[in-house]
Image (tube, rainbow, N blue to C red):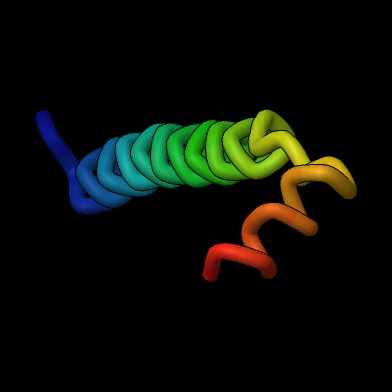
Length: 55
């Protein structure tokens, strides 16, 4: 017989699993964004000078 407590326990377990998946996805997104920012190369002094002369 399925009791109310069994149903609630199953729902809570499912919620925990989904929460973990959401947290993992958020962390992966944050890591990806941080990596993309780190890959942007800073301009050298020569490039900065050229951009200020022509721009």
